[in-house]
Length: 254
Image (cartoon, rainbow, N blue to C red):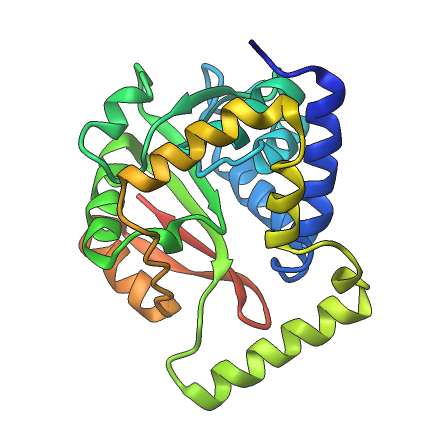
């Protein structure tokens, strides 16, 4: 049984506020990602094909759909609860796929049918172990057309520990000025979700999957490390196009 639209709207709105605590200048980062994709698909025919990796409740997919209403967007995530929120609240933004990024056969589950023009992700790929991440980058390079782009918005630490601490401080100060810490945090959001009976079955399935898989490793590689992996994976260009504190948008061109 699907969720009611009212329930999905309520929890997605709370998700949007909660995420402002973590993603430095989150809305600007989304805008930059959309800018890059818009430029990459300019003049493409037929409709550009875009994959949103770790789409969650559809935050980035919805923004891309508003910017590029003519694009075909495929959102992929392994979290059944977040996917159902996306399917209900952002139903028209994308086609949503339940798959584990980096797992055996995950690219087949996307059922693309043609090369991707762009793949995007935000605050998701850092959960992949380095060997899985490199394999995933190679798979994405194979899926993208020549000239296609991979755009990843996330927090990447500096290799220098002192600079990493300073970049984190800059980000926290920026979030504080925007009153982001007035909102509930990640744990509070999930605790509240657990009190909603309409989400009970989805939450049970989420917990079942978590218990059946290894715990998230959350390896934070530096930008330089990601650039090396991307070039080894077959991307011709890789680098930062936007940064605030330790929040970056990294672009790789096939």
